[in-house]
Length: 258
Ligand SMILES: [Zn+2]
Image (cartoon, rainbow, N blue to C red; front, side):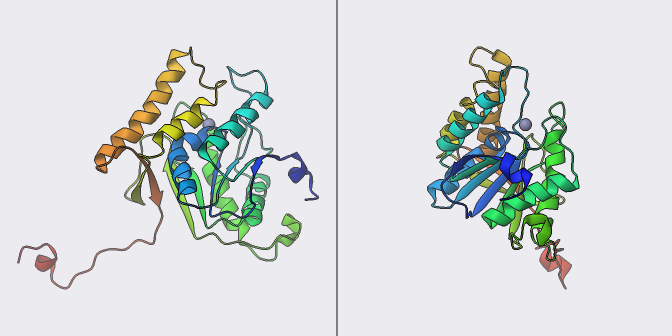
């Protein structure tokens, strides 16, 4: 922990520094929106769960100080029950995929050794483009974390190879042509997820009808997807895999027409 970047990072929760799963995203409250129910569910199942935000998310129109947002993020993380939460010192509103950003995120991966990384997926039209940039930073960080002969960029930290990168859409889109979609049943933790989001009073003030409607839509989306999966509520994610084209010697048999 000698370099400047590690001294400027802010650790909000640190019950362990070895994780099963780590969510990485642009701003505090993003992960709560796209995978908060899944994170809470994994904690209940006994996994070590961490969260990492690339920026502190400030400034934002309705908030006064970065400290307030950080405290909200800590409370929200504790509501979900996560074991680790860290905020990296990359700039909100000016988040771009670049070498420095990838190295900062890769360092967290090398330190916490998660088996799985959760990332946001797709565009968030009309919202911050930081979300889209974060995807490229995360993809780069996953790669950089496992590259040998680069220890000098990581103060000697050894390499780490995750097993899977899982992407969650923040909006409605899912791209089944490239990915397989999996529904994570969050019926048990949906209320916990919504409670964690309400901790961000600076982002979702109780008397702001537009912001409250946004939160309602997050909940309704999880419930709508839940009906498609024959349960109360789910979060959808995409898991990349090698393309497998079904193969047959007997097409009619394959089509069950024979
Ligand atoms: Zn955001």
